Length: 97
Image (cartoon, rainbow, N blue to C red; front, side, top):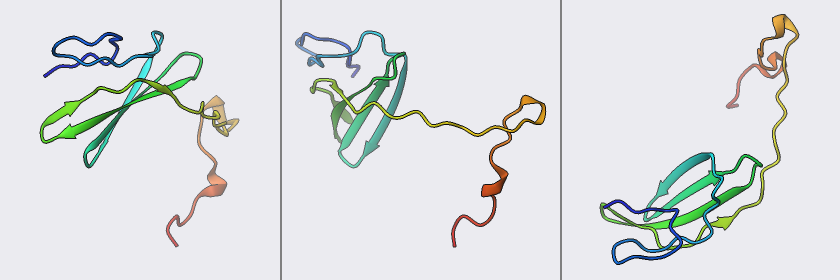
């Protein structure tokens, strides 16, 4: 059954998930064992998360959205070669030693 993760007021068939950031622009979903997590990011870089329980083939989303620690942006290195990103070739080689 569909559940609206943006609703602030519970209904008979859909529990509330207060604090949803109205300007969310990106989403990620993760499920492990009996836990599911949905994270959203806003244009300002704020990350919010809600947790759901997995019960068989059913998800129960009845927790509020909680703001997470804003991640620090990663700076990519680029090559001057025609202005294209080629990665940092000095890091090539065996990864698993």
